Image (cartoon, rainbow over all chains, first blue to last red; front, side, top):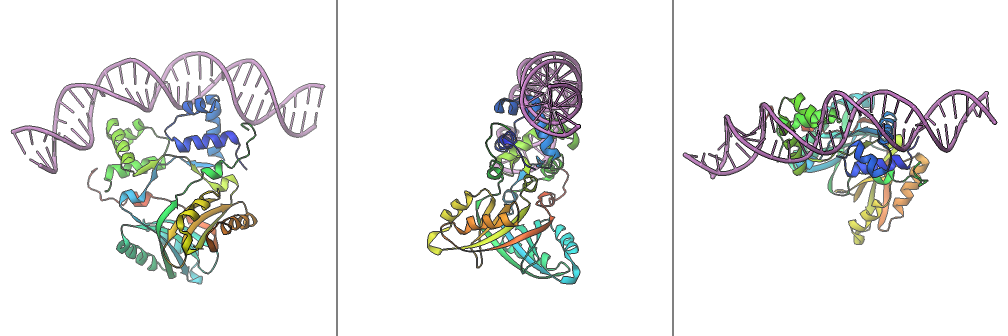
Length: 159
Length: 159
DNA sequence: TCAGTAGCTATACAAATTGTCCACCCAAAC
DNA sequence: GTTTGGGTGGACAATTTGTATAGCTACTGA
């Protein structure tokens, strides 16, 4: 399952100028409108494009601190109940189960370092969590991006 | 800097049904079209909404493996040159500098576990990188989300 | 080789949305 | 008391969308 050059160009275009409509895209890409429409439909259908939601910057909402928290959980309790509890905490933006000495990895945000303490306490209080370890993100030299990956597509004309 | 209830409702609405236009949003929210338009402009201006780019699932592109790589770098080299090099690797989706024993934290993807080895080798080869440590994300019980955070806004009518 | 299929182009049309105006109103701030 | 920021409601032309149509080409499998 992969995408072709035209898909990649379309995704790039939309990533860089999200307000473009289908018609404008077709003009920029030099293809028919129906093609763009069909491509978008197919990309969404295949699950490549999962949505067009607005990108929100937590920092702009006052959540200036980002941290990564890894946790060990009690073996008997299992991951799911813990994950469910974590999901109840708004400041927990993302949770993964992981390999290695720890069991889970979370991205969390907070309004300040002091506020981070509060959030970590919430996490520690989750039933089944044995131990946590946190690091604070000081800077983000490479913010989340997928374009380089998308553009890593063989150039064979448009197809 | 914060958002009010109407902003939150608007963001929620757009997150859940991204294809809605301004007009439809105004209908759903029960406010005038101009209001929605103004709110969106302001949210974008204030940096709360940073974009409307398509959300791409790396897994749908064949990058089934996600991993977190933490690195130690040579003190003398500084973070920036290392980050610049990391940014050249398409599979590196995100880089943060962090507190604690390690210096940087990256999210990377790969086509398979074997392919992950290749990507890690690319990272190790970056000048200034001394040591890396990786964990693989096995599952993602809570995928990245910001809605709970956005909805964590006092209910005081619409404002 | 031939039929079938998938994907792109081109075109058409009505319906809906957008981008901008404007005038007016209200509440909070000065 | 008056400025000011935000919201309302309405109006307009221009553009875009949704949806169909038909024709063309390239590839696939029998």
